[in-house]
Length: 268
Image (cartoon, rainbow, N blue to C red; front, side, top):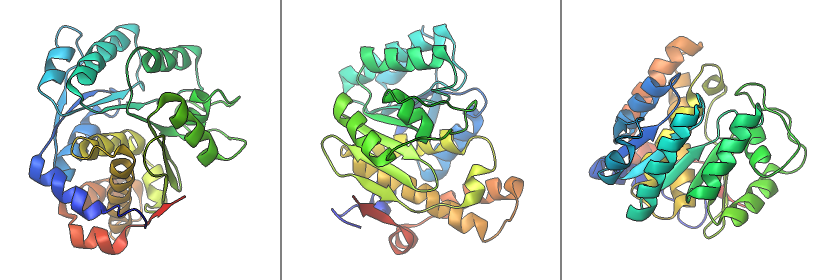
């Protein structure tokens, strides 16, 4: 661990400030995203309608966008909320779920990036590689093969958009144009065995970014805490259904001392 990324301290800050995190997110995982925000210490709100999305963002602390169940109307609502977030200097997290799978997802993810400021761009390896212009494909929402060094791809993409890029996988990569670059080695294989863990990770990142302006440190800390909860949950469950419940409980019980002992964040 370098540059003093103290995931335990940031977890305490989330719980002290209880940020309201606005989501325009994936209908498949919306319930899980709401719950994971509560477990980590934030407050979730979901306002998808364009008639209220900007207004809701005005009273929130962060915005999490997720293109997992994409519609054209939803993109309009996302852009309206993100413009308000930009005006209020609220962090915007964009989870490019399924980028690389269809033309619509590719085009609309790039449209969002072109029309509003996205502070943290999050995805799996093939999703992020696709956003960087690499010739890759995504199997629905599952990561496909990525030729080349994903850390280098993420760093180049972060420089292009002057933001932070978070790549989730067996090892998480966080690259930043202005701050540190990190590898996070917390987590457990069971986190990839049920639907929604990636979307939930974006929600946790939104909570941490709401209280820490160094978005690379916030993203690394969020992914470390989330991964540590996975490691703790795996001590009590060896199958996905039970594991999911224990993951939420582990996040709820997680304390800064445990985080400081278990976090695996390295600078690269």
